Every structure is written in C-alpha cells, then in structure tokens.
Image (cartoon, rainbow, N blue to C red):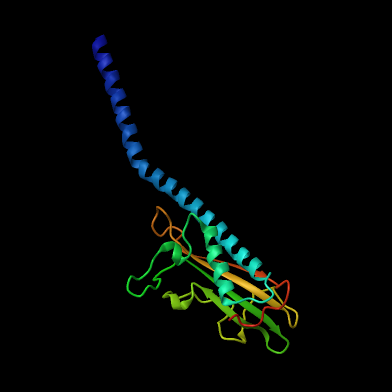
Amino acid sequence: MSLTGKTIRRMSRRHAQRGVAAVEFALTLSLWMILLLGILDGSYYLLINERVDRIAYTVTDIVTQYQTITKADLADIMEASGHLMKPLTFNPSDLGAQDPLTGNYTEATGYIIVTSVYQDPSLGPIVKWQYAYPPQGDGVTAPNSKIGTAVQDSSASLPEGLTLNNNDNLIVAEVFFSFSPLFVDNFLAQVIYRAAYYKPRLSPLITPPT
C-alpha cells in the first residue's frame, strides 16, 4: 500500500474517532447540564433553609425580650425579620404582589406565626394567643400552625420531649417558606418549615396583644 493510502486511512480513522467523541459528548451533555443545575438548586435549597432557620430564631429571641407586646410590635418584628432573607423575597411587601383594585396582597412566599403557649396545671399546654404575618386580612391565607389554633385557651401541641412545668410560658415562632427551585422544575419544591422555642425573659407573655 502506498504511503498516500496509509495516510488517508489514518486520517479517516482519526475523523471517525472525533465523530464518535462528538456524538458521546452530545449524548452526555444534557446529563451533565441536569447534574450541574441540580447542584445549583441543591445549594440554593440549603441557603434557603439556613435563612429560614435564622428568621425563626431571630423572631423568637426578640419577642421574648419584651415585657409586654402589642400587635404593632409583632408586625414590626416580623416585617424586619423578613429582610434576613435578602436578596431573596419573603414578605408580600417585598414581592409587591398587590391587587390594583383592592390593594390586598394576593400571594407571599413566607409566613411567620408566633404562638404563646402556657402550661395550665389542669389542662396542660394551651394557646394563650397567636399572631400570623402577613395577617389574614391582607388578602393572604396563612398556613395552619403546627402548635395549635388561634382560639384562646385551646390545646397546644409541643414536640415530643419538650415538656413545661406548671404555669410556664413558652413563645414559639414558626416560619413557612414556599421554596421553588431556580432551574429544575419540581426539584425539591416544597414548603420549608422551621420552629424556634424560647421562654420569655422578663415576664410571662400570656396576655393577648392588642
């Protein structure tokens, strides 16, 4: 076989190998892209979890430093705490999702519910008061608290292993955040929930705020 023939066959073999590599790359590219986007969404999910944790503990920590507290105080605390999620959005005022006719907020990604729990010697743990943010009247429906309802003196549910002495008071902050992935639809999409439990420091906070 002539030198020219050998060279042509060698070049053809190289072209074939390159073609196979290109096809393999094209077939695996989508898988690599999905893996990369999944890693980014997973990192984003961990970041959101850390921020939600921080909001829950911050709200509880601040509320328990009050001797008496009002609804205006609670609203200010919760509004400010939502900024811990920055640059992400948490409160409806961040989203700007307002109905142009009614002025009501129609959606929110985050909710906070603060509950005062009292250990009644006869009834056990009961709810003395509860405050949700954004309030129901703002055109949004808050999720159900896992501690109890807003009905005064109704039964309260505490995590297993968390027990109170008679006449003890506990403040619970629950944070709900509707997580949506950035890239992969329905990947890890869920409502992230965190709760923090603190005892009031200056006085029992069992009087419903006004």
